[in-house]
Length: 133
Image (cartoon, rainbow, N blue to C red):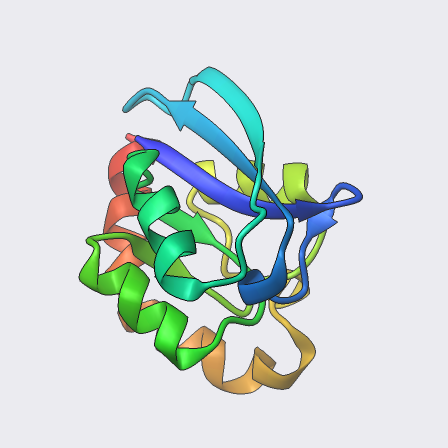
């Protein structure tokens, strides 16, 4: 499984649409890291960004804010999006792999009340649980 996180100075970039760096981490089903690298996102055209991310074979993208058109493009490309997340990149990656990402401390301030309820029903949790086992 490949996980992508837009990274800016060791924290998640605030807005995916304009993020310049993307951390890609490949993990085994057990959650063990296989590889990691960063790429520079130099194109601000959303269609081209989506195609580049899709070509990388990304399964899940964890990000902060993201525009609805970009969400639609990425989801249509088969990429699982977990958005409205903020914090230190390594802490978020670790929490995701442990199935514990949806803590209020990782949620962007405007979504803390509604996101926790939403995440309990979210299909992303099934994928996280599958990695955790």
